[in-house]
Length: 274
Image (tube, rainbow, N blue to C red; front, side, top):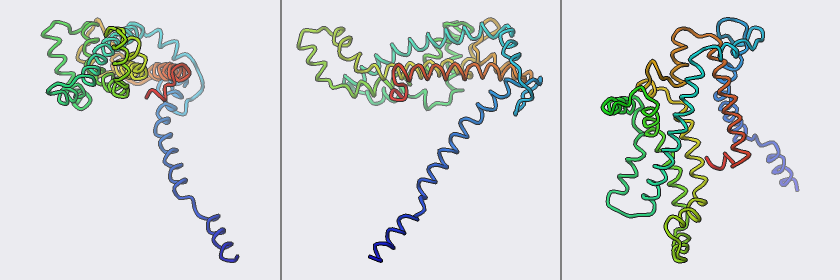
């Protein structure tokens, strides 16, 4: 009985090293991720003419000046159009490529699959320079069409990978069963394949939109005096000095992204898609 009591007391007072280490690690990650956002959001409400944290006073004046800044709204419109266009193109091309890689066997399939993912490995500055040279040859620089095509290149791998995983998880016997019931290829895709790969399509679309909307390096090569994306405008604004207007723009984007994530989580289960 005494030995049992001693064993019980040892178990009771055993230091939970792993739990404490894991908790501290999670806390550190939260601090690293949230601290920059907290600083930016706080600086957007300061009454000073320069960014400071903690904010000195409280005002919403910088958000009004954000909309008074004339290049802001055209740049936002350009970024939204470019992101939507790149997302649609990436979905079409990425889905077709994923279906071809997953459903057909041909020489060089592995190499082609790796080639489709190469924009994830290559430095973005190299991709941007190569796209710029191509766009100049085709006379598509400094145009919305050129930005959309360029962003499709950098967004395509995300859609391809997401859809490929979903396609590989689909039992091909289901498609064969639908074909044996005299369904044509389009009907098989519409009724069987498409519902099964919808999570991969949604995840790929979300990643593509975010990557396109957030791109700066490629956009710097392709934008000009008549057309600029929002990240380019924000970068140009900061080169003349930092004031709370840039913090107000950043805060607006943070709030908009947070609302979008919440809506996606409630509607589709965003955490399950990614």
